Image (cartoon, rainbow, N blue to C red; front, top):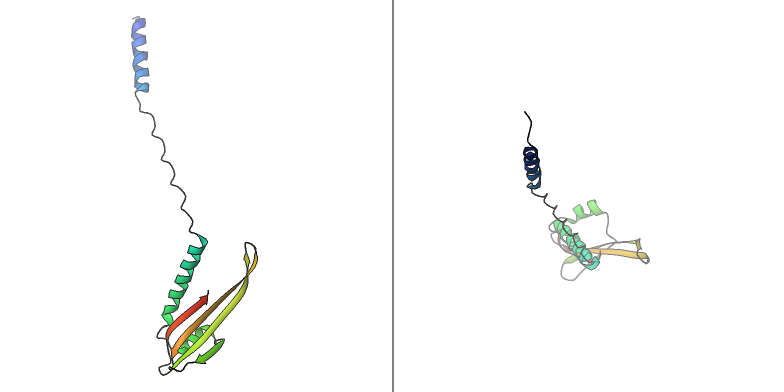
Length: 126
């Protein structure tokens, strides 16, 4: 049986119509913008706050525990109100963007002399 040319054209047209009706692929979503870096001063302040909070665990500890962990303080002084202050200090030369920079950190642990327990601390530099 001989096929009519118009039937072949209809079949071809049907096949092409099926291809043309497929939806185009969806574009990929755009990547999120890179996270903004905090300013160096903000990063430094955050680091310093975290360091200060990390020293809170010493509050209530006896001075012998502090000495066993950190060694002898650089100096100790007594105040007239019954407190004792143990000073720990460290410094180092670090590479800075414009050359060497001296980094120093001073931590003072305030001790109630009667109970021999640390009641507070303060930091400088760090």
